[in-house]
Length: 236
Image (cartoon, rainbow, N blue to C red; front, side, top):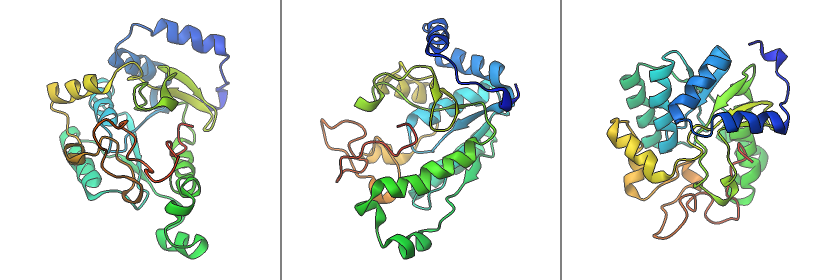
């Protein structure tokens, strides 16, 4: 489909789509999206979370030439970049890398050192949100790893939604899965995953804003742990 023909769906249209896909597997949802959006579909994979890695495995089996992108904020863990390299070799993929328009040095010069401590929303906006806009330009839909069990802000995630921020469809094939089910898929299909998960990091972002999670804490509690922030802004 031509992206310029995209129109924001009504809530009734989204409800109908999600009703049609209510009993579909993640693979069936990806297949549906691949058939509907073709090359105007892209997969976001951070090489940090297990959901993204499971979706990567599923997607390349369904649509081997699917576009895959990631954002290098310049503050990624070495383990994250290693996971990217392992995935590239295993799946014979070449993910598209997007970087912020401002370097860490330029950011420090303009906004002061350690902006992420003083204004994490501004840091995420420049390094993630604006960069994501570049990645999604000209696309009709993107696949994300959102799940309802990840955080209180994601309880209402549906398999198909309209992304107001970026102006395209947002596909979340794992919306109804929980963390245990994703790990089961990872192990059953020998999917590579970020080794930091085995070191107490269930949710992995930038080095400056990610810490280990203690027993009983929500999986995303280690993100921006010293502030009330719980979302980077991509999905808010």
